Image (cartoon, rainbow, N blue to C red):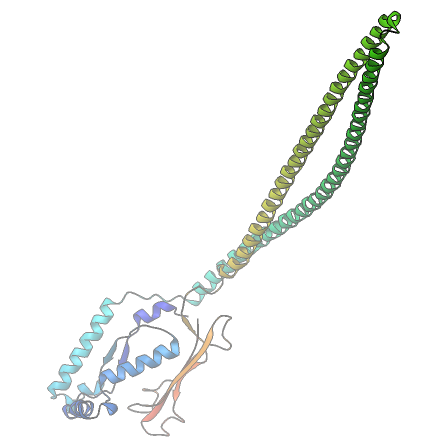
Length: 380
């Protein structure tokens, strides 16, 4: 109800704290000779501050003033020490009041009006966020569909690539097999030509031998034999020429085989580049989808901090029934407080939600031990 600012404007006033010289001497001597039983102003301030900090989960050092109303009683009016201490504590309270910043309270109508405005603004923002979330979901679904299509196309392209590569390998194998067969045939032809040449050489040698033995007997046929020898030599030259042609054919076939391998390697490299580009596009789309999901989570998180919700930070409010979500219930009390009397002039019962100030038992039942204070808050 009051907010965190309340603690900056809170002063703890302690009444009926006697400053008679004998009481002051008793407290001072007790603290000196029996520290465990010390009950002076510092002990009371620290004890009460620890209780308040524990019960209300706050970390402020609240000021304390000890104003004994009996110091102005006629029977103590001549007690200089009491009067002096009363003036010191009164001056301390006055300075705290002057230094404190004004703490404005809101009326019920102010709270209701502000609550109405915040509810209206909250509804508008919720509608905006719902629309944004709906658009993000549509965009996410669209991108997911596109990614699935691209993934399918990528798989299909990969399958097509594998099929084409398999076909190319098959064709290459067939070409290589045909070339090997052609080379074998050419080698067989060359071998046949070489064998024929060898046989021709043998025939020429035999012919020459026959000519030398029969030259005397066959002088009339000399010109004929010379023509035959000339013809044979021409045949040998033609065989050499055909052998050179076959060598060139084999070289040409080998060069053509190398060219086909280069073309195949270039085609495979091109296919690999296309596959890399498709994989890069798939990665980019997946990154965009991840970014969209992150933004959607951030929108959902921001929904919790819209106006009209409980403000962020650590603070306490008086409890009235169950605590709101995110708040923890804290309870504390001070019972059997000593008062001057148990009448309505000194004890006025009041409730603040679940918190209350009442008489201890029935008013006056336990003498001057007549006051109870119960404080119940919700803190975050």
